[in-house]
Length: 260
Image (tube, rainbow, N blue to C red; front, top):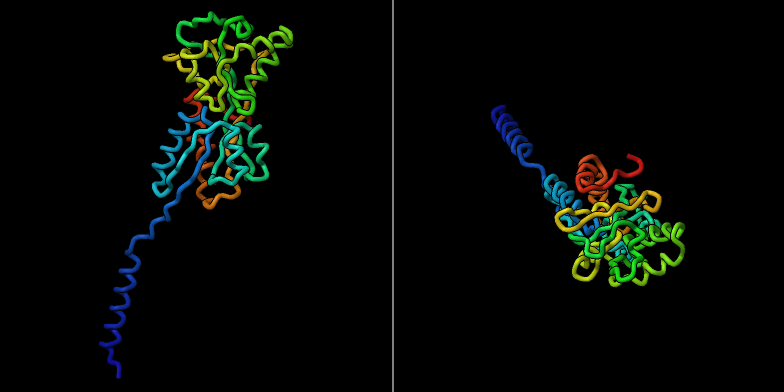
């Protein structure tokens, strides 16, 4: 037979268990690793964006690869491990069946960079066709190469097809990654056409390209549909394309995306 004292003891014991249970800390979020493919020309800005994101999401490890646009497209095509891709809109357009709808994240335009001292005496786009000038440009399939080619073709409207032919004769280095294109300046090449975000007064001199010949390119970021960590990937994309990410990109000389 249960006595009132026995019932009270059971109540107190149950209450104690409930209190102890409610005082236990919430289970920590599962650790996640994101494989992120980033256009190499955005490495410095995205290194900071990733650092800021990681500080707020310690359970998420981001493994970036800094790649040329053509390589990013190939990896997505081949189903290589990838959760997020960030590249030129022309690159991601070709992969749209394998990606969530891309988000515009930045714009960039072109400049001519030369080594300190400007040994080839470059003063304008037209000078890139001068005899003896050594050029470092992106490959035709890369974003930096595709856009440089568009700039050169615009110059042909004023200076004829010989201008294009002479520029091509002057190419001594062609690389897929923008960082490799820049690395050849000074040691192998006298000039390059590259992104305005690559401007570094401590290393290079900058020659502006007239708006008449320039090309403004848009870059996008998207979640790869085959991602095994889609929720975390979407959260990172939202962060990178949100106020904090855009402020960081502006600090690194990128133009805001068309929609901002």
